[in-house]
Length: 297
Image (cartoon, rainbow, N blue to C red; front, side):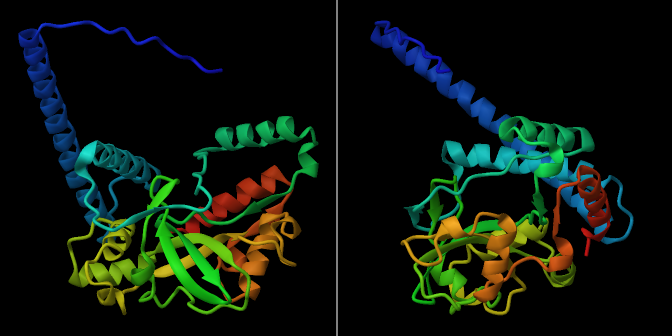
């Protein structure tokens, strides 16, 4: 359903228009100051919580920290949208949009997800197969390969338009520059920093708030060659064939098949012990609970 509204045009005398504009600008400036204050306060709190975490004395649960971090990132994106973007990297439109994922934070939300799929497909719960793999909190990228060679890298950006990271990616050892596939393809995945590596980084560089902050900052270095040797990792989760071929998208109907194919062409994916294929909601939830214990590794 689309809801629209009509625009009404009012003629305002010049002086009145000027005064209204001035008040509007003043109000916007106040809002910006409030947003800046919230960001600074939240950043300070996150840094304190993070220091406690890495010193072995966490003061809040992982779930609470993740919630505050998402709030901080949301406020940051909001500020960037109104003209405070800090990146100077050139931008380009994606060949295909990079869509976002929905979240489920507890068993009730997960059960609701299962029920929505039952309604959507018209199948029994036991007939719907799920493939589980970890969601990495890093920087999403789209990598383009042609004739087995890496030719372009783009950040997710807003899903429609991303930043060109080709030169930067050339210096990331974890991303293969030559693969065992001669087709024209896009590989979507996540550049990230492992918690174990970030703990090492924190000892010599205290300016980064979290692994994602470190990863994002590294990818925005003015000199891409400075990325060489930095502890960045990569895992892929999607492949798109840009031209019809024997390896058509239609042949890869399941996410598990996509992951297996990526492995055969020399693209890093999650280790098999971190994935699960199942039709049993109880088994899926049990896997999630057990995986939560491994999340800090």
